[in-house]
Every structure is written in structure tokens, then in C-alpha cells.
Amino acid sequence: MEREFRPVSALFAAQSRRSFLAKTIAGAATVAGVASLGMPEFAFAASGLPVLGHDISTLQQEESIGKTFSDGGTVVPLEKILANRGTTYIRERLWVNPPIAFNNLSHVLAMATRIKAAGLKLLLDFHYSDFWADPGTQTTPSAWQGQSLSTLSTTLYNYTYSVISSLVAQGTPPAMVQTGNEVTDGMLWPTGQIYVGSTQNWTSFATLMKSAISAVRAASPSTRVMIHIDRGGDNGGAEYFYDHILAQGVSFDVIGLSYYPWWHGPLANLQTNLNALSPRYGKDIVVVETAYPWTLANGDSTTNDVTTSSQLLSGYPASAAGQLAYIKEVISIIKATPNGHGLGVVYWEPAWIPGVGWESGQGDQWDNMTLFNYSGQSLSSIACYQ
Image 1 (cartoon, rainbow, N blue to C red):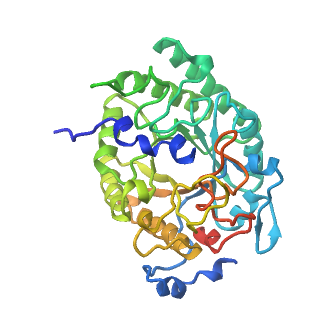
Image 2 (image 1 turned 90 degrees about the horizontal axis):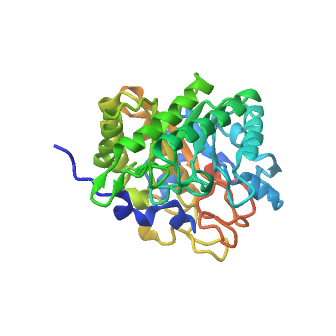
Image 3 (image 1 turned 135 degrees about the vertical axis):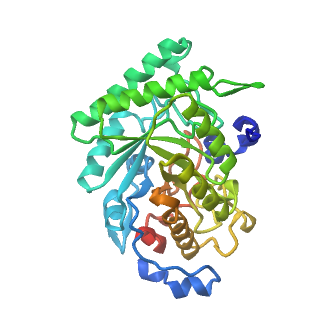
């Protein structure tokens, strides 16, 4: 019997990226220090997970206005700070024809070179939109609009193949690719939207997803393909989605989940979900987006997304130590995934410090979620992967 699963547009409109963005050193946070805050104790040791990532897609924008980052008082390129702190993957988002001069192909190519030079692997996040794509917004790129399903599928294939081929040609093939960002309600709306009124359109969505995946595999056979949704704390919703796309014959490698506790519930929900998904599908799983605040204060004039203690997890205060404890506990949960399918975690935008808005004329609602203070100096939580 199928679980009830209402459309994401109805259940989680408030969670869209557009809405939530519109949307010193390791020794400072010891186990004893965490215990003194009343938080769970665990070993602060290297996690051993293969994917220990950060999404730093806003970095080039920050650098363009002169922002720098430092660790232990030394200014170093951000990707090198992260590499020195145990990071293995960097995630970069790609928009098709964005309204700002960032997160386009030329910028992704430049970042891929820097990522490789730092000894890190690239996780490429196709948004398949000109701007933000998320559960509540999956706008077809303006140049692709009005195309039939067949034509759009071909356009998607050619675009995806061209991007991956460009990365391969410069010697920076992505280790992993997301064919769409938080595609819980499909992508390339309206053609690839799953929930339309009282109907569900899995066939068109699956046709587009298969096209994108085929292009990745044709251009770079060694690249692993992830399908990413936002249901980190919702096992019923996650299984409903993956059951349906597998029934449509969609072949992929990695399950990607977003998990933010103020939207997706307590850590126990995440653990329950991973414990169920692993044996059900036999696929590796990455918590490909998560974050936690280090303060409830605001670094600019735009209201942050998490502003009150009622949004926090019990035992995890809005402090660098609380943030570090949260990330370590997420890692612990992932490591306990059955059959070794817990592949890793990606922290979302640890360096989005004040100065760069989510769109032109807007501020930053994420500045209290970073692993750096408002001046770009690392917090003790930078040790989260060590």
C-alpha cells in the first residue's frame, strides 16, 4: 500500500531555496567542552567517510568584492583551508544562463581547476535552471522554454554532455554529479513537474532524468550519478520518490538527501531514514546538504533563516561548539548506516559571509550558518572533518 505523499509544493513551499535564502582552531572545542554544554559526548576523530564535502558555490562572488578567509590567522585560499581541515569533496552549483555573472560554466571550470590543485574532488550540482532550483522552484531555462518533451530531452542531453565534456577536456572530470537539485517535485517545470493538480507525472520526469544521466555517463563513464531530494528526515517521502523513479527504470548510483533539522525534524528522523533506505535500495547515500548556526545574531540587514532558540536541536546551542557537535553527530549517524552505504556529508555554504546576497539587491540569510565569522576568520567548527 502506498504511503500518502502530498505534493511538495503544498507541504514544503516554505522550504524552497528561494524563500530561505531570499534564501581558534580545533582544540578550542574539546569533548570536555562539549560535555560542559550538556551535549552528547563522542570521539572527535577523523570520520573515515570518503565524502567529506563543502559547497562553496558563492566563493567567487565573495572574492570579487575582496573577501578573504583565514585559518589560525593566516589568509589562505578557501579551498586550501578546507583541504587542510580534512575535506575531500567540493560541491559547485551550475546555472544555465544566470542573471548574475557567477555559477555559470566558465566559473565552474575555473573552480574545478582550483579544486583539483587543492587535491580535492568535484561534486557538480546541475540546477538545470537559470537561477535557484529547489523543491518549490524548478524553472526551465529561458532558452529552453516551450519545447516538447522530446526536444527538451535532447536539449538536456546535449547541454549536460557539453558541460561534462568541457570538464573532462581540461583534466578535471567530476567525481560525482547531481542531475538536478532537490528534484522532489521533478525538474524543468512544467514539462518535468511530477505533481500537477491531482495527478502525478512520473513518466515525463523520468524521461528527462534518464536523458541527463545518459549524457553524464557518455561524457565521463567513471563519474558517479546522484539523484538529490530534500527528504532527509522523511523516510516515507524518500521511499515514495525513489520507489517511483526506480519503477520508471531510472538507473543511478547515489541517493542524495538534504537535512536541515529546523525543517526536517530531529536527528533521530535522519537516522531512521538512512537505516531504512540502505537495505531497501542497496545504494550509497550522501547527506548532500546540511548546516547549523554558530550564532543567532545577524551579520547584515537581511533577516537570517534561523533566528530563535526554538529552531535549534535540544543540547546543540547556537555556538561554534554546538555547531561542531551537530556536524560530528551527523557524521556518526551516517557512519552507522547499514551495509556501509553511508558515503558522507556535504556542508552547505560554510563561507557565505556577509557582503554577498542571494540575489541582486538582497542580503545573506545564511551568515550565521558559516564555519567562519563575519570577517572570514575560521571558527573552531572548521575542525568538523578532523
